[in-house]
Image (cartoon, rainbow, N blue to C red; front, top):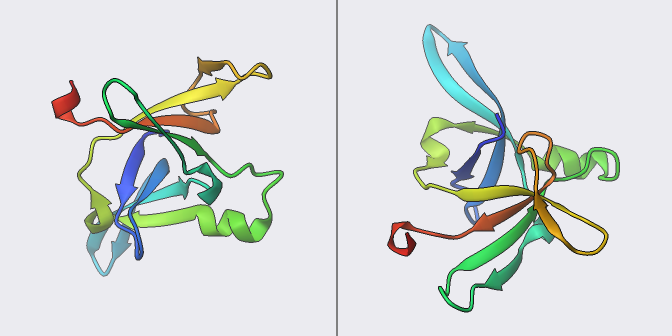
Amino acid sequence: MGDFVMEHGKVANEVVRIDYILVHNWDGVRRLLVKGTRFTTESLSTCQDPILGSGYRRLCLPHPVTTPPALLNDSTALIGLPFILPRQLYIIPITVTAREEITVTDRVSAEEFLWVERSLRWL
């Protein structure tokens, strides 16, 4: 858990952190589902790499204590396999200190992330 998938959304594609993977048995047919957490809408700040030209996005998960319950319910996603897009996401868990220094942290307990929008042509 703690990995990320791109969900095919109604309006736009969304990044979701995987919390659980479960199998649902419906009339003898098993379906694989992913329960995840969507990132907050405030986390759409984008920066541009001046040399490579690729983008960076700082993403934040909703905090369970400070976020209102209605917004927490909106951030929860239950996704079936047909709605998971086959896209490799390069997301790094980070912690920001009081002096605005960014350090890499544990991906399961992290609440902030840096999404490096790279493709194979950049490697």
